Length: 137
Length: 453
Image (tube, rainbow over all chains, first blue to last red; front, side, top):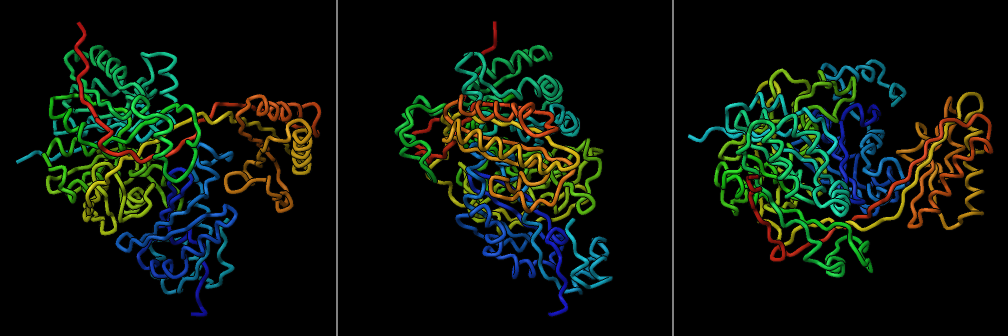
C-alpha cells in the first residue's frame, strides 16, 4: 500500500451542492465504481468536517449510496445563515462542492491504470506514479 | 392500453430560459403530454407577497409574463396540458392573466384551474407560527410576517386535471408534486400506494430543476464535457403505470442525459436519502438504480416509499433589514497593498461612525466565495494583478448600511491611489424560517377561473 498515489477527489469523482436554510448537502459521486471503496475509507464525515473547519460545521453526516457509487454529506450550519441571511456572495453554498473536490485521497495505481482509458487525465499519474504529479491547478 | 405518460419540465426556477418549453412541446405533440414549470423560489414567493400588497391584481410569479406568452399557445394547440406554480402569492390573478394569454393565442375556451390554500397568513397568527418553528427561533417575538406558505401536495393538482383543466396554476406546492399530480391523474393511483407515489415523486424530483438533469449545471471541461450546452434540452420523463421511469430529453437538443447527470440530480438538496419528506410520501432512494437505455435515456428503478408525514412544511418570511454591498477595484503594481489600505480605512471610519455595524470584506477572485478577508487572510495572498474589494453589511437601520456604502464610495477621492469602478447597491432583506403545520389545519381548494363575458 505504500505505493499508493495521491490524487485530488476532483480527478476521480464529481459533486453537486444543495442547500436548505443553513444546511448544505454535497453529493460526491465516483466516476467509476472502482473508486468507491477508497472514498468510503478515506472521505469520512470526520475528514469532511475538518476540511470545512473554517465554516465551523455543527454536525456532518455521511450517507452511503453504493448503488450510485455515491456518498451524500450533510453539513449543518456551514452557510453563514443561508441564502436569506449570509453576507457572502454564495449564500447557497453552490461553490462548496468544488471545495470538497480539493480533498486528496490515496488510490492504488492499478485502479488508475484500469480507468485511464475512459479518463485520460489519469494517465499523468500512471506515467510517473509520484504524488508530485498531482496538482489541482 | 393506457398511452405512455410523458411529462416535460420547461423551467427549474423563476429566472430560467423563457423558450425552454418549445422543443418539449414539439417532442410531446399529439401524445399524453404535460409540461410543468417551477418558477417559485422561496424568496420569490415572499417578494410576490410584497407586490400583492401594493397591487391586488399582481403578486404572481414574474416568470409567467416571460414564459407563458411563448409556450402557452403551442402547448394548447398540441393538446399538452400545463401545470405551474406561477401563482405565487396570487394564483387567482395569475389565472386571470393566463386566461387572457390563452384568448390572445386563440384558445378562448381553455380551462384554467387555480389551486389555493397554501397561504397561511390569514389562518395562523405570528405567535402560532412561532410555536411551530423548527430548527431555529427566527420568529420569536416577531409581530408580523411577510409571507407564510405551506407546501401543498399533488392531490389538488390531480383533482383539477380530473375536472378537465388545460392549465393548473398553483401557489406554493412541493416542487415534485407538479409532476406527481399529472401522474396520479393519468393512472389513478391510490393516495396510499406508497411505492408508486414514491416513483412519481422521484420523477418530479428529477424534473423540478429543469436542465440540471440534462447537462446543465454539470459541465467541468475536460473532466465532464457536455455537448452543445447553449441549446441544452430540458428534461422529459416517461412514466409507466408500474412506476418505471425513463429520463430523456427532446431529440436533436443539446446537453446530455447519462448516469452521471441523473445521479447528481437524484441527490440534489437531499439530506437523509432513506427519508426524503414530501407532502404525499416519504421517498427512499437508497435502492435506486440507473439503467442506461440508449442514447440520452436513463431508466430509473428502485424507488421506495413510506407513509406520508403527519405535518406539512411551511416557509415563513419576516422583514430582515437592509443588505448593502459596495465594491471597488485596485489594479497593477502593488494592487494588494493599496486594497488592504482601503479596507483598513473603511474599518477605521466605521469604527468611529457606526461601531455597532458588523461588515464583511472580500477580495473577489482571491478569497470571497470560499473565505473572506475579515478573518485575516491578507498575509496569505502572495499578490494579485487586480483586487476587487467587496464590502457587505446587513442591519435593521438602513442609514447604518448606507454609511458603509458611503465610506466605500468616498475611497474614490480620499482613499489609496487608483481606486476604480465603485458599484453600490442596497436591498431589503427577508429572513426565513421553517414551520411544521398540522395537516388538519390546511385545506387546499380547486376552482376554475371564470370565462370572461
